[in-house]
Length: 335
Image 1 (cartoon, rainbow, N blue to C red):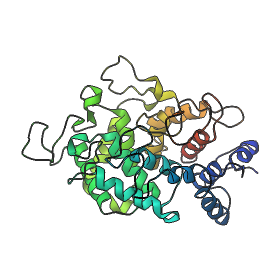
Image 2: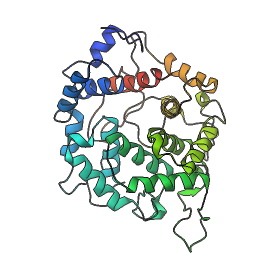
Image 3: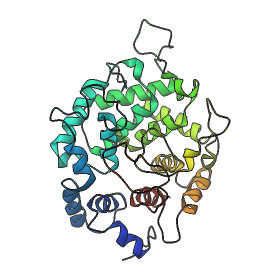
């Protein structure tokens, strides 16, 4: 079986769609638009009762949290924030299992502040771009509906543009910057107060998934600034500000699964293609880099993993990997 649109070799398609691996099979069908709607629906049902999605959901406490009943950031990478992000990247859907909505709602109860900041502490001081973007992108992918998400996107846009957000030292308002999210334009305390491209990749991914009807003028302004940031250099070089190192992190070039706060060039390309820049010549080298990492048989390696740190194992490092291969084809089919 061949797919001429994304040119997946027959042997690789058979590998991705092996029924003995229901989680990867479903994700391939879902993300790469393979085969019929009936086959996808059947695979979706199976994936929510078998494999990684079921495993993660079965680890959730009935009240709606993973590991501990708090803001859900620690321990990494099994607490609520990371479990929700993982579920979204596995293709889980809220309408398939009520526990997903229970978990999302409980998480927002504990981690979202009154002005829309999603926080590692449950208070505004714990807000950072990578967490905010990751959670909002995840909840959109999960199909979770909650008016608080609008508030979260509003804060994320304001914190990027600076519109209506006070300086960190202004303690008269909670609508201000803090030591983590320290200023506009992706500035981050963990990156020596410079813009953090890892955080930016999560923010832009979330914006890329937001329906057009929900993109306000402020959000459009934020997206424009984010696009300018990513094209301030060739994305294939990842030559963005490095607060503590003389050169970019080597992790930019290590494609992996799942993707938590560490980012890779594949994720930059994902957000920019979803935002409509797939034919932009400034993205050409990034897309070429993805193609160049493809093995002769049409697969990609797992180069960055979370072995022993999350609920599920997703394959051995430096071996061909279904989950990474799906990520790569998903971007290439848009370009």
